[in-house]
Length: 130
Image 1 (spheres, rainbow, N blue to C red):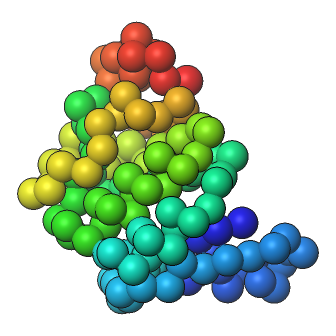
Image 2: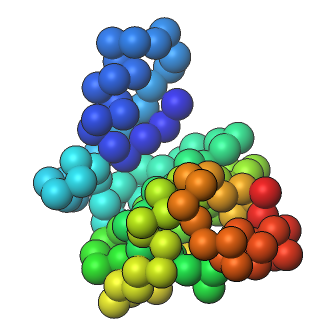
Image 3: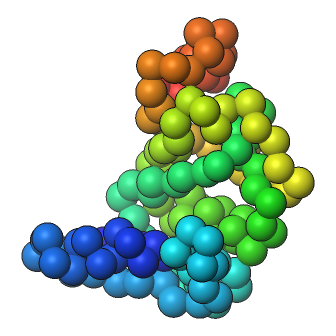
């Protein structure tokens, strides 16, 4: 398991027996994760089966973020994985932040809740997202 998230790392370190790596890098305190060049360079060393990507703002066009430093980490994670999964609750759908990060088309699967707009769910399915 490879993560840039301190909360996930702490949970897995006490609740699993998996081999666990943390990216390190610039600490973004607001969401307890590492971002930026050092984190993305560390993640680039790994090949992964599945990249789980979260976001605070997205539309059917793509993910955006107020933090430019999150982009390289998310892009490397998706690039180094065989499959990519977007995980975000429906309240974050429709929000748009300053920096474009990734198009939704890079994701094989989108995991969200039943509150997602029916039109958005249909558009995601039409794009080939499960």
